[in-house]
Length: 74
Image (cartoon, rainbow, N blue to C red; front, side, top):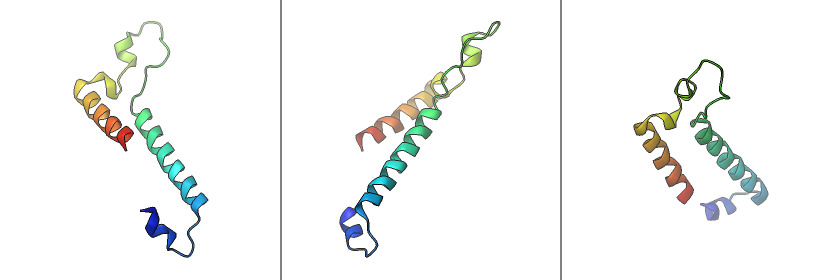
């Protein structure tokens, strides 16, 4: 992919690196935001009532883990 970019007249390697870092950071933030960790415990609420994220359901947890594991291999 990068070899094709080098032939472009306006190719700037440092900008390519910055753009790639932004892309990776944005994707990681999206993945981590899906976890929706429980908030601080509140009086009168069961922990299961405050934790309704991706990891709470077995099927969605497996799907999330699969996508995250695949991404980590890239």
